[in-house]
Amino acid sequence: MSKSYHIINRTNQAWHAKLLKVSLDQFIWDFEQGPYGASRSHFIESTEGIVGCTSFRPIDIKLGEVVYPASLNHGTKILPGYPLQEFLKETKYYEWTYQVVVSLAKPEGLRASYAKSGWLYIGDAVLLSKSNCIDKGFSCLAVPELDQEVDKFGLEVAKEFSFTLIKGSALLNWRTRGPQRYVNYLLRPRELRGYMIMTYYGYDAHIADFKAESPSDLEEMLMTAESFAARKRSLKVWSNFKDPFQEVFLKYGFEKTEITTSLYLRLNEESPNISLATNILKGSWMISGVDLGMM
Image (cartoon, rainbow, N blue to C red; front, side, top):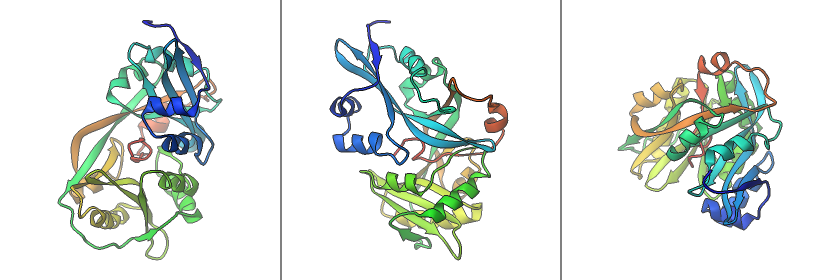
């Protein structure tokens, strides 16, 4: 260890926001106003002040056939010269007694520290991109907020996946009320068959989140997504290596980019005996760009 430090579980908002290089308003929304409660944060304190942080947001995830209370690791940052690997190991003993802790989308430079501190690398996600988008019309209905119809639909669709985050309307609406502007679209010819959450990010349009009952439903929603992106440089979406819808995107004209991110999972001290090979690796996954913390 190059420098002495100790872990604390409280600090002020301004210090935390400064370390993450975000505005105070964005920090409060992201870390303290989540629909399932505030994130639990841990910090490295040294003689230089607060030099590192990591947080855990309460969520629910489905592994195999079971939905577990869980937490999503986010907002990890540490200044040079301090041992991130040791910090991540020690936070395991401070966590909630959740059964599963899942960490997604770690930046390139942090992968080794996560892998060496008890987090299991389970695969990669890749950014897909489609250029030359044209306006094909909007067959989906734009709505300001999502409701309980989306809750029921999301639970039904989740049955098809061995690994996915369970997200109801409360979580999805909280995300869209943040500093990033999103637009919700519903595919509902008679009954709900899919939803898609779109946003603009720089010069590009992004499919931030979606659920579809079938590949054909996704294909229909993609026409709305392409129309949304018609005046932008490209339309992008994140897809993991076990995403059954990836072929739909590629068939529609998306291409794989060289931009990837790693997916990690860690079982904490209170976890039941979960067979990752049976419950995760053999099935299909549904992980969106919002789940990955990319937007």
